[in-house]
Image (cartoon, rainbow, N blue to C red):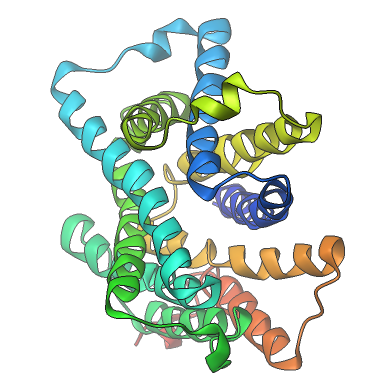
Length: 295
């Protein structure tokens, strides 16, 4: 179980590093929609190469699971990437991130309905801590960061819902397929859907700065392929609601990377928010003997 928690933490830290490469790609002139397509497509190409090289039997899925994977790729890859990107465009990074991290509460509710995962006092405490902590980490208290509007709020809530559904989908097939198979089909189908909207023909056909491809490869491999491999492997042993709470370490990691690589200073309130998230991640991993939290 401890190793499964570590896999989720590794995934969260890798997800948190995505913003650094993204900032550099924006400076090089790429649009968010172009980055989204490359993120999914490079991850798909990477896992396809690994699977073809190491074990081709992992290419096989059962026919009756095809509709499930179509929904998985459409909702938790293509629609998630699109809705979160649109929420950022309409409301700003802070408001979009706050709306995104309604996901742990949504996942807990759905996990209770679908997998009968209990919502005890421990989980409620952790959900409250993570939502509060993320609110502070992304400076939700700064009204200048909150350009709220009805359309942006709806897109942000859609991002939270589709993000929350990722561990729900993943848990459904975690015991039936290898993590490579799950990533292969979810990212492949997601890339197919994204190609109908955002195919970046000009980026592929025109000469780009060499670092453009370095950053794109990084985004596709580390905060996408590597992260989802870790996360899906962990879902074999960790309930979706608990996994979603641990993964909220992502914005804390993002703020840390922004400080180290971009020189963006942490405000005291942001540090307090990061502390709340870390506390929640620790609490959710407490041994079962701490029954007083579940009463």
